Image (tube, rainbow over all chains, first blue to last red; front, top):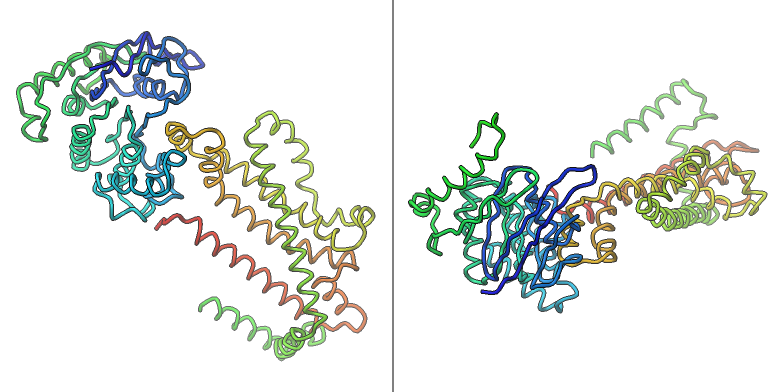
Length: 259
Length: 246
């Protein structure tokens, strides 16, 4: 597969001197689902924002299809952790999903794309509601549908399931895997949850705490078909999650109690 | 229904107080005198014209104030140096009571409708201006990032994210200005003396023969106007800016 995304020596220092990301280099192939896992506040979100073109990194380069990212690239969609502040409260669910399509598709096409994306996430019935009328999990489904309707070449997900309850989280994880299998969208997902990164990823990129550096790039040798129960108890899964946990613990502050 | 009961109670209390002789009827005529007078006035073309003059001046003033304050608020909010530079001027102008400007405006533009409209615009600018600036500061950054991440440029972010975000706050400002504007228009009508309207009607009824029944009927109409305006704007807010919140 061809390289879709390349980070070359990416470095970002915020005004005031806080270094969030330091000399980060890796590539992502087309169709790959890569998970980036790192401790909370390690600069994962900064990395994603640099890839999305929302911030200009202070050093290094982000290359999409070989050309450097300046400004927000087309064909790119983002799902943020905080769905309640990412969906537009003044628009209906349907209009939220259509928002990115305005100017890119006719009215009829927009409706069709939005409707099929909502169907895909199981929310066709909620099209005419407003986001506040839905539960958190449903709102995040809407945010996902909005990203999917856009048919992005690259989908960035910033801790997408960190604010929903455990049961919903499992459902949304499986939904994401199904979408990935069906559409082959290249996905870059940031999480602080080790199990989630192994369960979802084709590979797991482990980052150190701030400033984020690449500690390991681990392929996930699990079958493409995954199951919340059996996959999570398989030997490969357990070995890999242990390895990631060790890597993360090795860089965690010594006073830290949690693994 | 309970609100209505309150009004009935007030009217009964007023009637009883006058009949019991607690207040002289020539200063404060009871509702049994004022209400028939009010009904008679409502069919009087002269009074109808006065009401129209007041409402029209008020509506024009509110539209002009909104038309100036919203763009100005957006500009001041989005250009930091302009905001800093204008702060002193705004803080100086804002506390000036609009009616204090009456003599100035009468000399400048005469005693006609332009004066009362101008005063109501001046008084009505501030709530809308400040609410717009405040609302602009409160725009959710993630909404902006989301729109940008989906390829929205500056213009789309302004029209499709910033404007809907600030709209409810702006409407609250407009509601405040509407109430202030009505008060200023009626005051100006009393003070300038030549621009017609309810204010002048009340003033005329109070001077000479001192028809307190007509004065009070005029006051009741002014009160009802204020109530209807506020209720209408509240309804607008509920219907368009609640966005399905429970």
